[in-house]
Image (cartoon, one colour):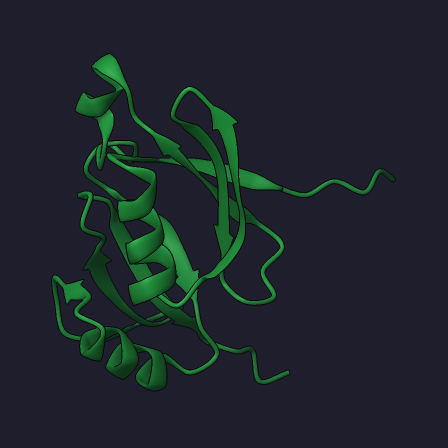
Length: 132
């Protein structure tokens, strides 16, 4: 059996610093790397504390700008799992995160849809735990 995992997901942002401001400043992710690659390009990696999968902030250029916030085709496509929904929901509201809805219970857990400033739709979710 091989040891594989999803290492990174690239997410388009209009500007590296705007991406860092949101993911690190508002969402509370860790800034793992910010390396200057020259010619205005940077290698910027962020992730929630302890996460295995990271985001690579990709500054959109040219026609890519039209895809900022549209990588999920208008659907929720990013799922931020928490072990304490109420704690993180309160903290996110205090940090200025915009939620589309009030928290709700679903068969799979407690969830609410929020938006990043770039137009992406996310779920903040605390999955139901199997009692067994």
